[in-house]
Length: 310
Image (cartoon, rainbow, N blue to C red):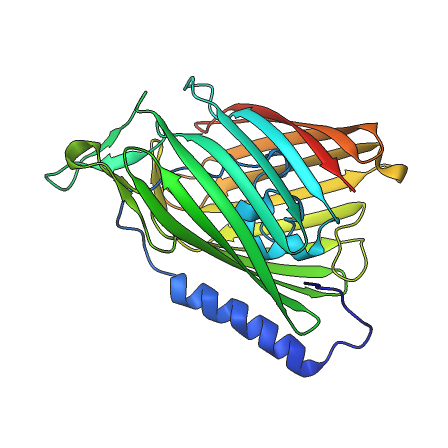
């Protein structure tokens, strides 16, 4: 599977790719009515860029952020991740993932405490604390369509009180230094538990755009990106629909990477989260990644990862 571009982009390829992204975006642009989980705490690089990662995703966390992003990544990428996405809760995110351009696998242990659920009477949303974890097992595959477009799919097995299968889909289009990405997560909207303990992972759509100094669709030393949710989610802090902007820059020889970003809630009361991160090479192809985030009436988190790439 390859997303390598060649000089002279055809008009038909551009129209086809943009049309696919537009159709996906239009078909998903509807309000949320079910309960949802804040699972965007996955990915230390992504968090350091404020969550503006849908069109950037090129490491093993692409299994979550955009399954189609693996095609533009390294020959091999593996990582171990540990994060505390919200200091108001003791639960942590833990994960391990590995990928090469044609296949990715991942396991994440996510806290259930940040889920809001609707009571059996219908209206009131209540928080969940110390309700266990959601285990996510994912396998990602992709398929190139022409020289500029990749479609990807992550098949997921999820376990909380119950076990359920689910599906994420993604698309990535590249034209020179530009990358356009879109994802649809939790396509089947799986439900877990029963009664007041029940919760649903709601279908969630997101689009992204990135410009990078790399060639032929590959992320280079300097990257800027923008993400926008197309659907709303209910969280413990209220209804959310995020808009994010991020940037990443690397020193020559990739000895040090610096990233930063922000995201703001465009639904209801606006709340802005600021984040930043670093990557330090401990040897060629081996990195320690870290991030921290803060803001007003938003989650305050931190995390780190060990990442191997070649």
